[in-house]
Amino acid sequence: MNVLFPALSDASPQPALRFGERALSYRQLAAAAGRLAGRLDGQTRVAVWATPTLETAVAVVAALLAGAPAVPVNPKIGESELAHIVSDSAPTLVLAEPDAELPGALAALPRLDIEPATDGEEVPPLPYEPDAESAALVVYTSGTTGPPKGVVIPRRAIIHTLDALAEAWQWTADDVLVHGLPLFHVHGLVLGVLGPLRRGGSLHHLGRFSTEGVVRELTADGTMLFGVPTMYHRLAVEAGENPALAKALSRARLLVSGSAALPRTDHERLATAADCRVIERYGMTETLMNTSVRADGEPAPGTVGVPLPGVYVRLVDESGEAVEASDGETVGEIQVRGPNLFAEYLNRPDATAAAFDGGWFRTGDMATRDAAGNYRIVGRKATDLIKSGGYKIGAGEIENALLEHPGVSEAAVTGEPDEDLGERVVAWIVPAPPSEGAAAPTDADLADHVARRLAPHKRPRVVHFLDALPRNDMGKVLKRDLRA
Image (cartoon, rainbow, N blue to C red; front, side):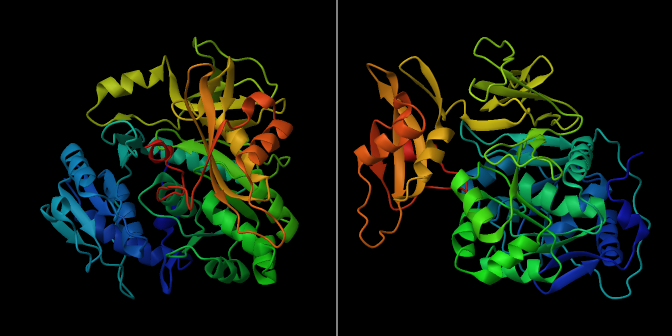
């Protein structure tokens, strides 16, 4: 049987987790999580108030040891969404740090406070490893269409994804991961907490992302950094003016960006300022990780790399036929199959059935594939594929082109109905701060800029200038809010 956390069984004094000034060794984590796991016997599901703290990590590890599926809850969640999640997942217990004030739907549940280990505490016998197909987590999607769906993630998917990433990224027990991601999402929780623990390495969580924190941790003993594009944008902008940051980034063995595409301009800024490259990967709550640029592979900025070991990826056209072209231009929907897939949507057999094409999961993400097998995401099928004048246009490539204009700080692209074209390209722009002698870009400037770099039919027909783009907790642009 494949044990999820072999290093916990060893109960070594090696460092496991550090959040700010608070830390736990593997022995202390085994003691705290083992003790808590013993109190979770018989629980069908447990909600976890997922703050970026040691307590959250201990709670999730304890639930995994006990075989009680954990439902991580965003501490910033709204009342109606929380009520839906509690009603839908029906947790029998909520785990929280001692001083946390829980909102109504959670406050009504039986509560168990999480207590990290004390010095010298004995490690209890760890529970028998649950079956690989048993549910480990129930993670709720963002609910862009209707109420959020509970994605049931089995232990098998977690084990496969973390081991596949270890192979692709050469991730070992010697690595110290640094990140400041939230812990209610796959990126921060599965990759960012469970990943180091499965390898027997350690995590240094920043608590809250800051460039100062990145410099401190990578200058000390950090070897890997996980982040989202908004974080790497800040790092890219500041690295050119901050030698300490540039040096710290250049020291890292691996920089990984995910949850959305990292613009080419930020890849180039980081390469110039810090002589480093950022690896991108592609995954979803339902699939965990599907593809990645390999640590030992050729640089492929702007792509999410090749399929991970054991994961099968294909592109299909609108009729469901496989796209064979590897020309970097032909767009198709990504479909995935493999041991990394979720088990089901909780209480939604209809949605589960609709999500699959035979054994292939329909991701709803559109991409191209190049001759080297690298996939480039061009956007979501529902929001980022624009059909204009007989062409299929991916919003992502236009956004990248717009970001290459010196007068553009942030960019998002959507489509809107057009009587003549079917849909027209619409750009939403946050202008860059004005530089001496430079005028702010106009609609015509940006349209001409895109037409020169891509093709005339891809130029924006409408341009809106904003102070900021609406984003979620993971830094993704909320395009439905733009349209509203």
